[in-house]
Amino acid sequence: VSTGKVLLDVRELSKAFRGVQALDGVTLQVFEGEILGLLGPNGSGKSTFINVVSGHFPATGGQMFFEGRQLAGLEAHSIAQAGIARTYQIPRPFAHLSVLQNVSLVAMFGGAALNHEQATAEAWKWLAFTGLQDKADALPDDLNLHQRKFLELTRALASRPRLVLLDEVLSGLTPGEINEAITLIRKIRDRGATIVFVEHVMRAVMALADRVAVLNHGKLIAVGPAQEVMKNADVVSAYLGT
Ligand code: ADP
Ligand code: MG
Image (cartoon, rainbow, N blue to C red; front, top):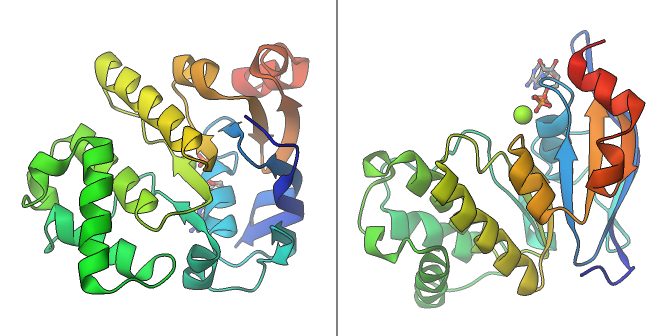
């Protein structure tokens, strides 16, 4: 599990959209090797956290360090190359490319550069890992929801990240598919990655998270073991909307 070493160090991170403070001075450390669940009601800033840390949007304030290196101000591709991968809440594969090509492309450009042959081999490896190898030649539109979510996950893994940010990869899956995904997420951690996952499926949060962090209106209101945090009065009232 956690080595006690801070992998991602986020300090006073803020993101304002016109009129909305989506992240409001969030300070949070993610330890190497842990699985951290990021929780909070709808609109509390969870996806924005992933979007800002991955460089999809620039922060409007604060700092973020990955292995001591400042990420604020870096473009998304530089952050990906530094070793951070993310999934999108709504999967966004390249619609005109096959499943294999979608994964190969990330393998080629997402992390350390690989040539075409190396990237294809890497893609096959990750498709086998997530169980999508039979779908290698399919187009994304031909996949069901479970397969699309797993393709999104496979693409994130293909850049060989040290930190994986997952945005609701389990939503809409059947209980059996959720179990499969829980096993897979544990395997991803066991291979050495650190994971931050946004999830509403509480069973999965309880099964996976070493710690949880809770956002409400862009502020971090609690962090710690799930059993304790879910009893925290501020967390309960955030979920009840009081
Ligand atoms: P969550 O993922 O926790 O449901 P989000 O991070 O998506 O919440 O959103 C937090 C707040 O920021 C919401 O009020 C949302 O409307 C706003 N927001 C998120 N993304 C954008 C954007 N691209 N433009 C404007 N407002 C946004
Ligand atoms: Mg979201």
